[in-house]
Length: 278
Image (cartoon, rainbow, N blue to C red; front, side, top):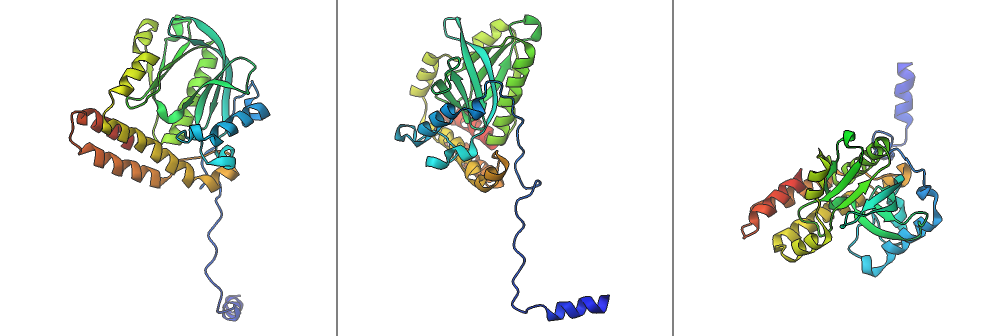
């Protein structure tokens, strides 16, 4: 048998090149997040068309859509949906539909998937703050990071199970997109409300932002775009996008560069740069 194998090897064409690289298998693919979508957003043609139009609009050129143009939907997948209550700045709870995808959180009016009230890119988030289960309010605060120009989003759920499911969906999608775990915090309802950043506060923060803050903000978005681009081929076969090593390396390099900058806002910029690298 050994002699027969040697003879076959000698008879093989001399011009044969190296074996082609293996196609992405389960071990090379990004993990697929579980889908919990009772509102049917994943199968909604109206929701798909609305997202497509958003990504193709020149007005939203700076938004993170995963891919440009008609291929945008290839990297965005619905992972969660629920009917919730959004709490406005006056403390009034309003019924809404919450949809979480692999790229963003959507706030829509009930049964109106063709148009949303607000879209928050996952890369804008910093932490999830929840109220204690014994409070029976089942609140969830989506708290934005220091360099974000977005304001916080306060939600209320009908039960603890739905809140836990929403928290897990946002946290998992954030980790896959940004490349680090989402911070989670539990606070009494009164403290949670005090921690909330309102629209007026977010606008004031944006106006006073330093040049370094803008650089750090753009750096986080650039890292995420790199991660998305690196997973294009894998996402088309697995239905989700992951985080590339190149993105992590780029984040570390950016953090090192920004961390050494000197300016009046240097301390906060270095803090945000460290957060970016993490």
